[in-house]
Image (tube, rainbow, N blue to C red; front, side, top):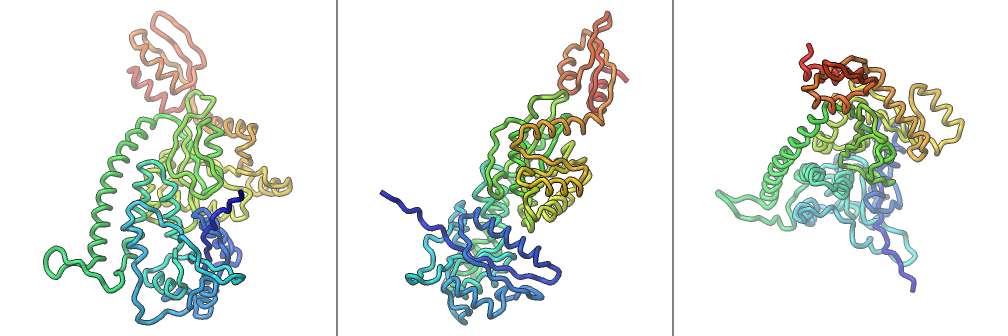
Length: 455
C-alpha cells in the first residue's frame, strides 16, 4: 500500500535591493535565505524582489509588488483599514513556552488546477511590528523576517542546556517588541492603579524570564570559564567559519570524535573540545564553534559570546571556507568581521579551503594562485587530514624552544607535567636527579621551571 508524504509548507521569499548592493550580492542573499527557509522545513515556490531606495516603511514593498506577492499567497494585496488584528503571533509563540515557531498545519486553500499558493512569507530584512502586521493583512499568510528564521533554527538545533538558554534569551529579545494586543483590546486588571494591559503583563513576564535565564547562564559560563582556565596552558586550535563550511567534518577527522555532521545550516551550536589524534607532545586540543552567517542577529552573537570565547582564547584559528560555494569571499569576510567584533583578529590563524574535491583542476589552481599561503583540502580525504595535522604541528613548532631541565628525585611528581606539556628529546640520570632535554612552548617551559624552583 502506497503512502504519501505530507506536503511541506510553502514559502515566498521577499527581498529589496537597496542602492550599493549589486545584483550578484542580492541574488546571493536571497539564495542564502532560501537555504535558511529549507532548513526550517519550507519549500520555496517563488521570490518577489524589488529595487528601491529604501525599504517601504509600511509594507517593505511598493503597491504593485505587494499585489504580486498577494497573488502567491491568496491575499487581497491591500491593508484593510480599521480591521481588527488577529491574535499576535509573537504572543502565541511566547505563550507556547518553549515550542519553536511551528510551520502552518496546512497551506492556503487553492482551486484544483490553480496556482500553488504559499502559507508563509519570509522577508530578507528585519521587520518592525507594524511592517509585519501590515504584510500579514495584505497577504493573509504568516510572515517571518530573516532574524526570526535564524532565531527559530537556533531554537530547533540547540541541544545542550547552555545552548537552549542562550537561544531562548535571543528569542525572547526578538519577540518582546513584537507583542501586540489581541482582538478587542483585551485587558487584564491586575496590580495597582488602572491595571496593566495584557501586552504589558506579557512583557513583564518576558523581562522576569530573561533575568532568570541570564542568571542561570552566568553560572554555567562561570563553570566554563574555569574549565577554559584549566586548559589555558595547553595548545588549542579553534575551527571557525561560515555555517555549513565543513567545520564539524574536519573536527571529526582531526580528533576521531563523534560530533554531529549534517548538510544543513547551524547544525552545530554547542562547542566541542577534543584532543587531536593521534596525540602529539605537547597535546593539541581542537574546538568546534558555532557557524557564522550574514546579518547574524546581534542578540545571538551576544548570547553565544562564551562559545566565541573559544576562538578568542585559542592558540591558533583555522578559518574554514567552503571553496565550492561561489559566495565564499563574502562568507570569509563575514567570519572575519564577527571575530574582529570580539577581538579575536589578533589570534594567529591559517586559511583552509575545504570541499575542494568538488572543484575541477583549473578552479583549484586558480584558488591556490589567489591564496598561495592557504591550504586546499577535503575533510573526506585522509591524506588531506594528515597534511592538515602536520601543518598545525608545524605552526606550533615554529614557536617552540629547547631547554634542559633537572628534576631532583624529591620532585619526581613533576615528570608527568613535563611529559604532558613538552616533548622529551633525551633523558639521563645522575646523582642530582633526572636530566631532560625538552622542546615546548616558552610559557610551558617557564611554568615548569618555576615549579621546580629554578630561577
